[in-house]
Image 1 (tube, rainbow, N blue to C red):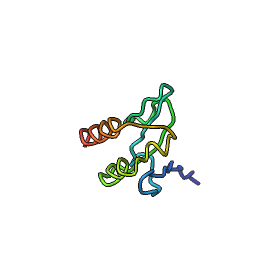
Image 2: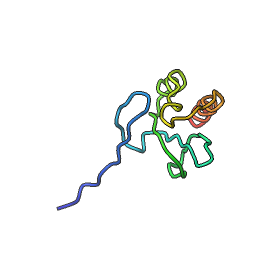
Image 3: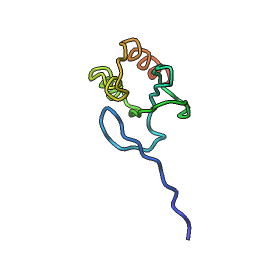
Length: 90
């Protein structure tokens, strides 16, 4: 009998759907308070996940979801940087 490998699921902060960790982008807030996209998935800090979908990326800024997830004030430059990083990797 073969053991079934468990696929780690994460919830998108924008659309609230559960998807496999590999399908998601990770947003990290490190110990210095810097917020950035983590493409490796291994950066140290508090993580939140968002779908690899342009609509979810837009909703992130519109609803200021990073502020809510990390319970801190995040400037527009962070949202712009995340959009630029995301579009640059596409």
